[in-house]
Structures are given as C-alpha cells and as structure tokens.
Amino acid sequence: MGRPRLHAGRGVGPTPRLLQELDAGRLQLANRIVVAPMDLARSTPDGLVTQALCKRLAHLAQQGRVGLVECGHHFVGDEGRATARQPSIAHDGCMEGLRREADCLHEEGVAAFVQVSHAGSAADPLLTGSRPLSAGGLPCPGAKRNHCLPQAASPEDLARVTGDFAAAARRARQAGFDGVEIHAAHGYLLNQFLSPLTNQRQDIYGGSLENRLRLTLEVVGAVRSELGADMSLSLRLGACDYLDGGNTLEDVCRMADLLVPWEPDIDLLSVSGGMCYYSRRDSVEPGWFADSATLIRSRLHVPVLLAGGVRRSSEGEALLGSGACDLVGIGRSIANNPRWAELELSGN
Ligand SMILES: Cc1cc2nc3c(=O)[nH]c(=O)nc-3n(C[C@H](O)[C@H](O)[C@H](O)COP(=O)(O)O)c2cc1C
Image (cartoon, rainbow, N blue to C red):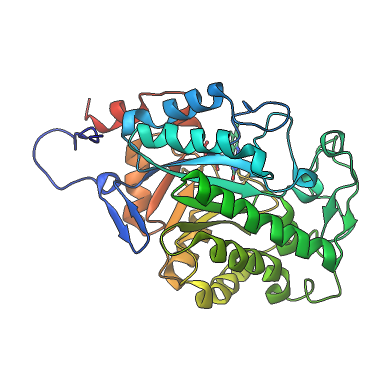
C-alpha cells in the first residue's frame, strides 16, 4: 500500500530531520519517528493477542506516518511474566495472534518490531506461580508491593532463559515482524544482571561490568542466530541507573566500548534508564536519557534511539540535531493522540 505523504512544514525548505529516511544496513525506515514500546494491557489472561490489541496498535501507527512501531514487551517464558494482560511470545500456540499483530501494523504501512522480555524479580508471582529469578536475592530499588524476594538464577536457569529468548526470536521471525527488541532496561532481568544495585554475584555473571553485561550479550548472540540475515535486532539498554551505587555515565562509556565487537549483530541501540526505569527524577528535559545516548552514539556506529518526555516535533528535531540520537521514540504523546504525527508535522 502507498505510504501517506508527510508535509514538511510550510513552504519549501530542507526536510525536517524527523522525516528523513534511515538507511542503515538491515534497518531501513521511512522516517525517524518511532512509537516506543508500551504494554497496552490488551492480551487474554493466557497472553494471546486480541483484536483489541491490534486495533490499538493500528491507532499508534498514525495512519502510516511513523517509521516504526515497537510492540510492548512480550514475555519469553511464563516465569518472566510481569503483568496480567501482557502478551506472550513463549509458546508456539501464540503464533496466530503474533501474526495478526505484525500484519495489523504492516497493513498501516509501518515497520513492526516486537519487544521480548523476562521480568526477573519484577515478575508477578501471583501470575507465574513461582518464586522470581534474579541475579541474586536483592529486589530492585523500585520494587512494587507485589514483587517478592527473588532467588539467584543458577547456570541452568540462565541457559534456559537464553534459550527462551532465542525461541521467542524464532517466533517473531515466523510471525513476520521486521525486528526484535531485547528488553535490557527498566529493572527487568537483564538489567538486574547489569546493575551493581541488584547483582552481587561472585561468578562470571557478577563483579566487573564485563561480567554483568555477559548475560545480555549471550542473549544478543542467541537472538541474532535465530533472526537470519534480514531481520533487525534492537537492544533496549538501561545503561545508567541514575541512582547512588548504580551504573554511572562512566560505566555507560565502558558499556559502549564492550558493545563495539557486537556491532555487526545489533542494528539499533535504544537507550533508556536502568534501575530508575523509564523516567528520571532529576531531569524533565525532553529526551531524559540524552546524556547516556550521546555518550553511546559517540562510541558506536549503530543507530541510537532515544525516548522520554518528547511531546512536540520541535523537541524531537532538537534531539536529532544535537547528535544525541538517530531516531526519536515517542510513547504517551502518540498513545494519547492518534493524530499526533499529522498535526505536529503538518505545520499547522
Ligand atoms: C503504559 C506504558 C507502558 C510501557 N511499556 C513499556 C514496555 O513494554 N517496554 C518498554 O521498554 N518500555 C515501556 N514503557 C516505556 C516507554 O517505552 C517510554 O520509554 C516512556 O513512556 C517514555 O516515553 P514518553 O514520555 O514518550 O511516553 C511504557 C510506558 C508506559 C507509559
């Protein structure tokens, strides 16, 4: 189907950065506007995709005016489920719904990624029926009341979890998604290994930053091997914790250096918060994690996505112009207004 033509503001002038195509190897996008992943809480109690979820996703696609919609987190294994209406990508029985999810976005003319996650200690034991896994026995600093004290994952647990991420990637490919995003941010399992606030392990998954990043990179390798040559892999990284005792901006630079050898496997780095989750108490400027994103973008050649508090297209333009990112993620502004892109980009 034809993609709707976007108006580049009044009069003739340079194309706004938000409307420029992204041509980066496997990642080809019509423009720089990305709908950030959001759990839309519309799956069945078994985690199956519903018509209501597809309808909502189609709204988010803004009549084809965004470059990419990232579908919110899907749990890769039943033990890693975070919320009651969260969709599953954990079983082959989910395939029909997953196909409909990818199709409904393609019908709107936009690229579709699916985010895959394991909540670790943020899994809800009332839903999973088991004691949650984490790097160790420590809760996240922002743990909710329904979270219970986790148990340290054994090497066998980690092999199973990595296999679950790989199987989820296979299902995403079979369902027709254009890419998979690995959720390693916002206090979920991979982030619980990355942050010194929750990881005090003594084995090869704990201690140094290299060790704390190990599980994430093992998952990246396992997912990449299932995606084949054409599909994109995005890593949503909770790089800095912005909390005392957590990962710092200095650690962010070292993380970026550790990611350099993985650049051929990763097509997009979505920079977000770690143990502070997806907002920051100390910053209300649009693009809350711009400091982390700028550091990462200066060290890697992979395109960088930045989300957080962007309400106006002018704010997105400024972030792209400042060199903080290559793509701008927008969550609530688009969720609250299915005509956001039309109104913001029409120049009216
Ligand atoms: C209701 C809701 C659900 C969210 N679900 C997810 C999710 O599934 N995965 C994720 O990485 N981030 C999730 N986020 C965070 C968003 O992707 C985004 O980073 C955050 O909303 C900040 O962007 P915004 O200010 O444009 O909304 C969620 C945010 C909201 C408000």
